[in-house]
Image 1 (cartoon, one colour):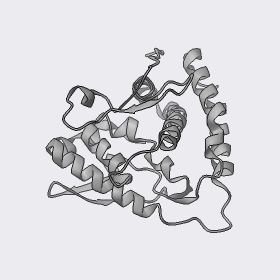
Image 2: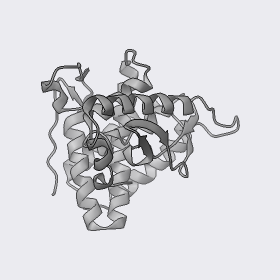
Image 3: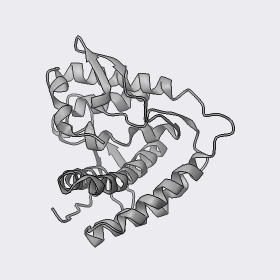
Image 4: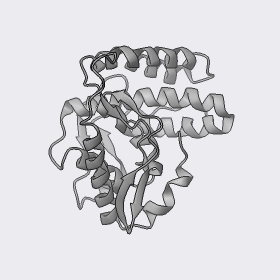
Length: 236
């Protein structure tokens, strides 16, 4: 996990155009990494990740958390685990966010910190964008997603997976933070509420509206929006 304070300086020194361009190139580079396939004898992604999710949810039960928030997360994740079936097993950086991306001369220059690398669904590598990238720079985040798709259209199936893994990341982040300190937990709890209110509804996935038409300043106030939102209030 990371903190926003270590991520702001270098991106805020770039223009919006430079932020977008750097993000786009970072997304392109991540896509290249995802061409690497897991060893043929490696377990399926569904098998591996479901075991981890089951542990996350079990530990979530031990946290003093708003009951409505917990139930929404649990129900959404359990009801959508099927999305992980038959997903490709590819190389994962597994900690892809601004602190692990290098900028040199106002341009993206590389990805670092591969010690957590893993194998699994490549979309999973984008799970931390809502927590650690979007709050720092919308343009950079938009660039990553569009660069990852080579500037082409983005499928509904991608958004379904992206939303699912964002929810899973909320659970794992809360469990991790509670083990660290109350300060960490309070911070990531706030991030979780922000992600949930801005990115998805957990009761029913509505049609996602990708809200980054260039030049539309009003739409640049948020990363994604659904036709309906669920604003979740938890213990602060």
